[in-house]
Length: 262
Image (cartoon, rainbow, N blue to C red; front, side):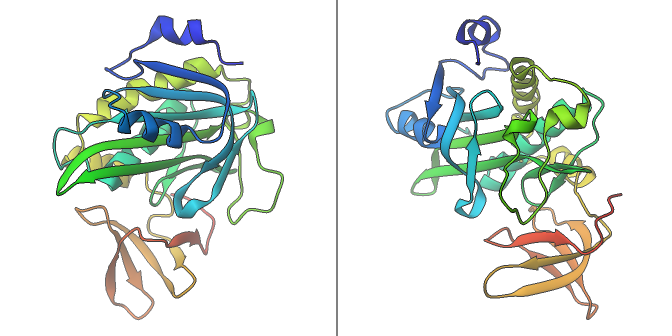
């Protein structure tokens, strides 16, 4: 179980994690954080659950966290500028997870736009949801789900293989310490939202760069070589025809044709 007293003793980190709401079980940490934000919760408010029963990822995909198996957390953020776009917030979360893995000597990549993968498969997902008032961001909720131990790996068929932190590291990882490291990195990158440094870090961590990939949804499919990122975070894809296109996030999913990583 996650220990509230242990979390409270170390938070906030980088202005994140206070106030803190810890649940033994919850439907969705993002839904709870959105409710708190609508009620006026301050920047940095953190919702954490030991079990999440109706969590979701991008394209409304289910993300269930069994009790004691992973990290399910959501932050209320109140960006001071438009530089903190939905895409950049999601990337900040993914980079934070990736850097926390690097600290544990695990190489990881960001599978565009916001999944964190290791060689064995996906172990984390990020979902950023923004509430607007006119052209102004009122608040954002940044949800991060991490598979920590083997019980967190879904047992049903997935579009992309799944893994967990314990398997990647080769030993049991303390969930509290992992959460602290994610918040520390996240807070640092949050200050860099919209900067060239953030785009550079994202591209350096981009999975399947210079490899053949498939981008598809129910209506369309594109095949080509993933060349990197445009300045606005769109994917640069060299089609088999030779045409270079820029692809926005939308509801597209990305899969490698060749599973190797550079």
